[in-house]
Length: 444
Length: 181
Picture 1: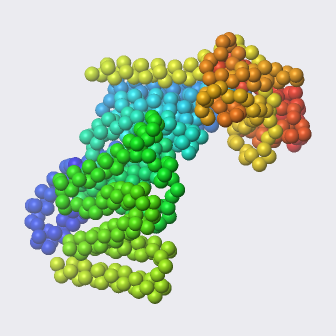
Picture 2: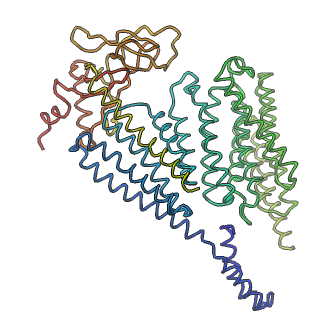
Picture 3: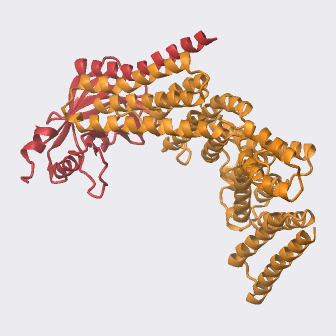
């Protein structure tokens, strides 16, 4: 049973006495329902609580030991310091072997053993480096650490460990600054390989517990890592193409939330739906200004047929994100016409706008296109909400229009009277929409 | 089914131990067999912020212009051989893009017409760090250049051995100049 149903079950059980007294269900039915649901007491809450307290406890013990050692660190000889650096690693390995032998079916034990082991790897390398004044660069330290952690993540099927791995990959790509590509280095593209190495583990978690919080945590870490990696890739590839690659990214985030996790919770959409809306809306509004299209780099920094390895590959990755968003969007449209796919249209719209900007070099047409898209998105969502009597959706549509209006308030040359009338119109729209919807709801 | 996981983890565990162990091994080699070079520190930028548990070092050898190898990229790893200057401090001799013969060279990063040495932090204990940083700064002023570091060099690896202020190792200097409390 899905863990999120618990609140619904609790509500239902609390309602039962009223339903019985109201004569809606019989006493037997109520009893049967009570039996049915209370026998299915899910182990989830206890499990999460146990995992959290186990992790917290081990971290506290570890921190205490570190404090004690650090206090006497100066008086220790080099061999003693090295021995201390290896101690947590060896202990964590012993715990890991114990878990593999005896507690392989227990998720808390697996999570705990894996996290402690992963932390101990980094601690050992860092302490040895400090003892010997080894400087090495930080990026390489993170890379070695993550590569050593990766097999542990697979062996122990840990969600938290996998999320940490994706965060580590992000830290790696961000810490390798100072290269020839506007701060990025060609080697940064390897981050996609790092991320890909973690994906099979993610798919396994997905199969195991699609709608669990552990899976959501990994998905979030993966999305954040992909965003930063894409930003770095944009620096190496066709720089001005970031308009499109990030349109593709946010579209993908939205589509994942809306289509891949349709049955996330009975009453709530997947958090990625909200994240996708925020991302798509922010990017749309940003691109609806003229400035982001006003760039001198169309001529020299944008080659759709780049010349050599790093920028060709980076441009390929950028295009792949746009292509993935378009294909995913088309597939979703074909599969399920009931979903609101209007926000996902940002990917093709941004692509067309970018093409126009590249061809003409004129920032007006692309920004106008994005304005029309925002307006259409708002009105479409508003009408969709009204038709289905969904107050939240209708207001979301109004909100899109309102944000667009505020954005234009800043850069348009309209008279104050025109702006005033526009705002009054939008405000009235809000009021009328809500009035109509609530009336309709009350009647129903 | 159980045993393959154990075998894989055993291999992984060995790799986990091998990485820090190899760091120790390489550094011990350098410390035992490397030749000693003295690097004079460069004048410190006084606005440079305090760095926590280490003293941030800069060296004169890093500010001298060198002739980079042909076709070298910015940030590329280069191999640097050293020579002593008249006062006995290390100077960059040659910069190559391939490993030179012999044991007495270090790996460094090319920064256009200068190089960046692979050691720029001297770890000290939390308690000593503020005093160490202040002392280092006082001894590395433009008019009073009395700080240098000894480095062991062996086959590309460079092991920072000791930081000297006013001719004394850092620890002794701090003890000798401790403010009476």
